Length: 234
Image (cartoon, rainbow, N blue to C red):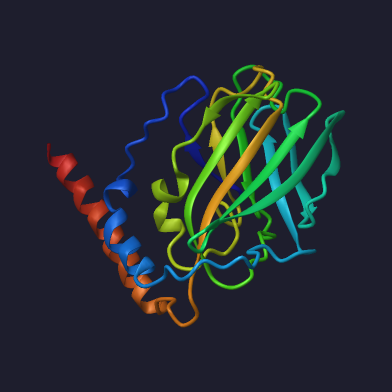
C-alpha cells in the first residue's frame, strides 16, 4: 500500500521545522565520516538503465509510474488525455558532487481537481535509479511550475527525512511504496515538476557497517521519542 510524506502546500511558506532536522547530527556525521574524495568525472547514473517517475492526483487519480531510460533523450507518455515529456540530466559539480535533475512536463494540468494534493517520487514501484558505485544523498528538492514559472520548491527533503537516506542511497525517493505529497496543487494549472538530487561519491571501503547505521537510527528514534515525551509533559 502506497504511503505519503506530506509537505507544506502550494501557498504555504516552506520553512519546515522537522524533528529530523534537529537530529541531523550523529547519523549524518557517522554516514559521512571520511566519505568526501577527490572529484571524479565518471557518471553516477548507469547509462541505458531504467527508472520510474511516479505521479498521481489525490482526487483526480491518474496514477502512473513513468518508466524512463537514462540516455539524455526525452520520452513521451500519455496520461488522462495529456502528453507527458520526461527527461533527466546529470551534472558533475566537482569535489565528488553530482547533480541529477528529472524533469516532467505536461501539455495540461497535472492535478486538475481544485485544491487536490499532488504526489510524486522516484522508484515508488521499486524501480529507482541504477547508480554506479555508492553515493550519499546530500540534498533533494521537488519543484513545481506553471507555464515555466516556478511556484513551489520544497525544503531540502534529504535533510528533513534524513532517517530515510542514511548510508549509501538506494536510488529511490522516498522509497518503495512511499511518495512525497504536496497540498493545494490542484486546479492551479501546474503543468510540470522537477526532482533535483545532489549526491556525493563514497570512496570504496568507507560505507559504515549496517550495524553501525542501525545503532545510529535507533539513537535517532530514541531522541525523537524522548522529545515527544517531554512535549507531552509540557
